[in-house]
Image (cartoon, rainbow, N blue to C red; front, side, top):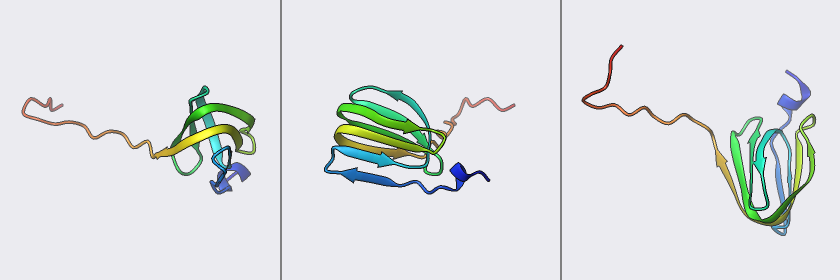
Length: 92
């Protein structure tokens, strides 16, 4: 197991203006209202707000620092949606 995988995911929010995250695996998209990323151990995360700016990103160490007006931090474990089944389900 490498050093990045052993690091614990930590979230530090200061006055809803500065967010420091550790154990970040990847950042998928970002703009001034939404940052979508994946953590190493806790699934996916959305950071919502206004005037969001990524101040520091280092995927080698897993660190991300965001500044702006942070209104929400939402986790999603990324579990696949349940398959719908019904009367006309195809059985293979």
